[in-house]
Length: 101
Image (cartoon, rainbow, N blue to C red; front, side, top):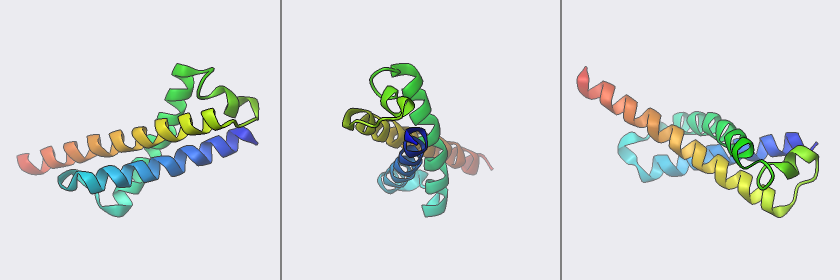
């Protein structure tokens, strides 16, 4: 059950991170739906990447079935940042393609 909860936290945090980044970077914003989708994907990837890189600190609690506050905070931070980064990357690519065309 901890794995499913960890995924849900990652996805929600990614959506929030994508929308915060979209609000902060108006020119790269993909709109609410686009920011949410990019954040969802980035949050899932960011949470998994953080879990793989840090392993014992951020992801072990979720993988072991018990969630402690440290693993939850690490998951939220990694997923939120992952969502924001992916949204920003897609936004920059979209803007660059629009200026060339």
